[in-house]
Amino acid sequence: MIKNNVKIIIDCYNANPTSMKKALTFFNNIQGKKIVILGDMLELGLFSNNEHEKIISFIKKSNIDIAFLIGNIFFNTKKTSNKIRKFTNKKNFVDWIKKFSIKKTDYILIKGSRKIALESLIHLI
Image (tube, rainbow, N blue to C red):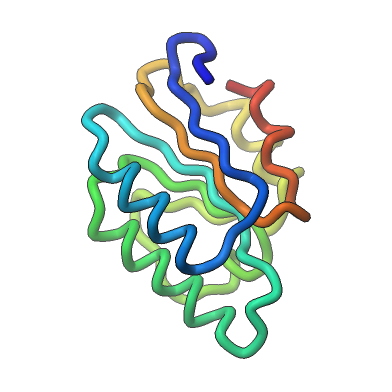
């Protein structure tokens, strides 16, 4: 999808460690300014914190410019970076993003578990 000259990749049907890493790897190899908006990967049980930490480690090493992480699991992880902003929920993200300009962005990847319904954020772009 293209909106306001920003190419948006939307994958809000399912999120697990494998699909998240594959999407981020693909996205990382695209040339241009890139933003990711990621929602928690739900139903991971005992592996949840560790798998979310691995995603943050990948983002830190990547050439993704900015990552917005939404959900209590991402919010409560220990790892962070100056290119990562964490939000406990979608409402807090929406309140903050209204002040953030993405006009100079080429690509946005939106990915998260179905229950988080991140596709509802597209109107903000």
